[in-house]
Image (cartoon, rainbow, N blue to C red; front, side, top):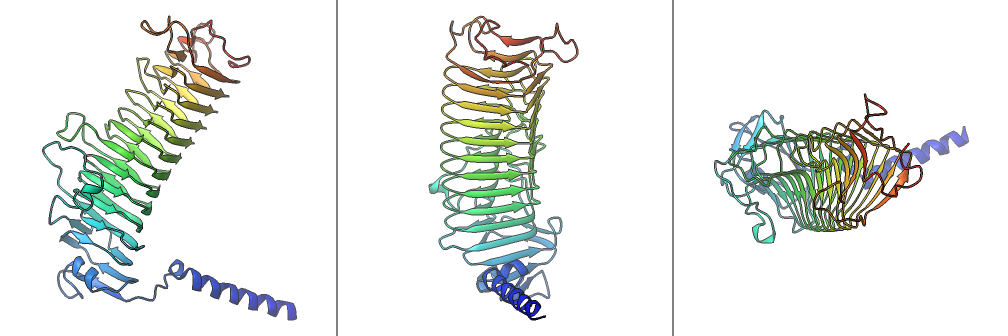
Length: 411
């Protein structure tokens, strides 16, 4: 009994410690709750409530259409009834609907709301960079040291969905970004975002008046992204996910479908793709150039570069790629490697492609160099020929066939 009493005392002390260090985890913020609605609430507009609230307060927003641009510079929680009921549209169309400058380390939580616009009829250049802070017509812009939490939020018919820059961080879940004109998500500076169980989708077609440079996700600078169980599909984007500079992304259980290209890596960008599907890209599923690197494990690439040799996976310049236990099926070419690229293939299955692994040399390409500088490594890959396996074979499994493929490279 004595020991049981000590154990219970330790448990109580532990719980008190959790409440002290993580009060928000149990909803104990210690602030006031304000209400917003057309009549009968504390305030008639959201911005009035934001200006009157103290740091740590909660603002509950009833169903309705609110036409205003919001600026938040203090710790607040905004809670709507739901994204179909609580809708905010911009009063000034050339500024963010919600802007968090992040001059201080503010913490903002948004739940159950929609930020909506009207699709523009004319194309315009992509809006980004420090000179445009607070001046771009996006749904949500967060910068500086701010930390943003989005849950059950819709962003619809806006030139840009969410723009993060500076040292901002965000945790986004159960969120939909539909019909973005420029991008669903733009990360610059050292922004660090996590997005899960969400959708970036569009019904806009390539002939739309929107800018042809449309991205599901665009990353620049030293930005970081973890994306899980999220789809970027039906966008007809130029690229579903584009990484530039020193950016890094991890994609798990993703679905990337029907974009002109799936994932493109430039400069020194890095990506890890796990348990994901990249499908139906007229161009490449994954394209790495410059000195970019990526690892692709336990994934599926199908129906990419269909009928042409752009490659479900294309690796050029000094870039590096590693594929492990991934299926490449019904693509124009499974893998295309050129220049001084390095490709490591272990235990992958390349089935029913026009070409299996294709190097950018003669005679595989008419105007290619005579000899390959590519480095190919790996073992245990299933790359059958059509003549040996009419059902699953590739029309041309390896090109050139006399290249010194590693021992055991082809199962």
